[in-house]
Image (cartoon, rainbow, N blue to C red; front, side):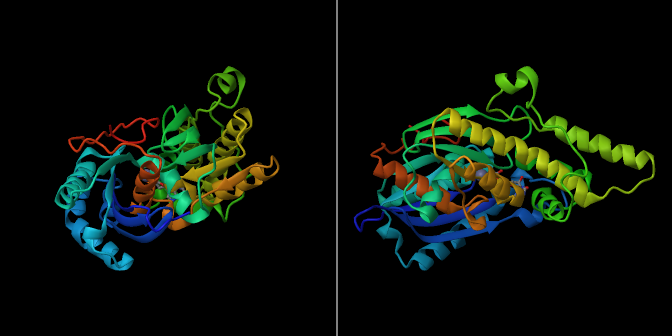
Length: 351
Ligand code: KG4
Ligand code: ZN
């Protein structure tokens, strides 16, 4: 719930290719603006950090201006700055952090260097209301696939597991490349999979059997699966047979989402939680949304997932995280903090 006296938090996101600026008061989103340099990378087949950093520099001021106008507030109304401090690309993070520090210093307000991955969960408050007391967080993006036990998003997060190799989005991007789809392949593989037969090709599920199943209860592995897809395609090529891309995508997507959803539900049952909150770019995946909802429902578990516009990186998630930290009474960051490209998931903000 938002009270009029709740602080106005300006959030800045620049971990990768999106420059996001948003304004949040309490649990209410007042403005959210994003610029992206993604279009520049299609021809390279991947993000070029140098180009991304430069694009942040060019986009920051217009994005900030747009957000202030949208919220109908002045810069001097801002009570605190929240900026993504990691994980992400160091050059990109540095641009956002420098901008945040300059604003905080000029306005004389505190700054919070926040964990951008936890922000993917925090954004849920802006849509579905106050965060549940205790929940399982499933963070799925191009760089992360993690299960978290969230006792309190502002103060107490425990990492239960993560991927041993590729992240879910990364695996989708790699399979997209194998199929000759544009970068990033994730949304294209998702779209094709919706027209395919998910039972036509059975691809392996990583860490799902034998000793691995117990040892890596909440971990994921997608690189063997990607290799299986590659082998399957090469096998057909050797025989001069065209693959049915939609079936390949559907079978592959099923294998990834079977693992993600089975382990998320299991974590919920093991830790006696009745809510799963999902976040990150990959949470836009249609089969993830469908399968998780189905599997959670039969166990009486509620699933909270962001609308598509909040799945990929955005300023709202950073402002929401900052707002939650402030309301929990967490101390602001020392303004001397540096970016941390490997910021751990049990660290909510910079000291
Ligand atoms: O969270 P995000 O914007 O950036 C990172 O922090 O990584 O996530 C981007 C990732 C990319 O790998 C992209 O291909 C994937 O999310 N993605 C999807 C879909 N939409 C985005 N993957 C599968 N299905 C989708 N619909
Ligand atoms: Zn992200």
